[in-house]
Amino acid sequence: MFYNWKGENQGTFADENLQIFAELNELGMNQFDECMSTNRYLSKVEADFKDGEAAGVNSTPTLFLNGVNIGGLKEYSYYRVRLEEALAEVGG
Image (cartoon, rainbow, N blue to C red):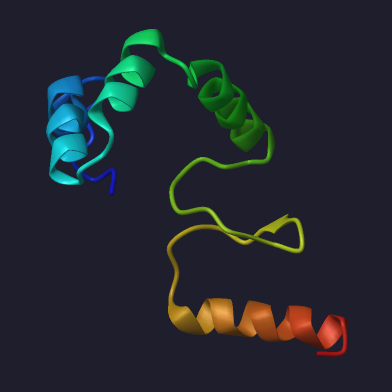
């Protein structure tokens, strides 16, 4: 998703492109415009970002299993083993 991201309000995720995406997805444009112009959720996004940093998130995707950061993009077999280990711990 972020492969083409070049920074805030640049490239694929520039405000004008987000506006186009919203229209193409038939979002309620009045609500979308109001949200964008007032930065309605900025404090929530910033808090989530800080929480992610504190938890060791440094890329997307980052996955947690039982509260443990098991990293980002890996082969399916890696996740399958981690899930089976977690299930064995709880008797599943």
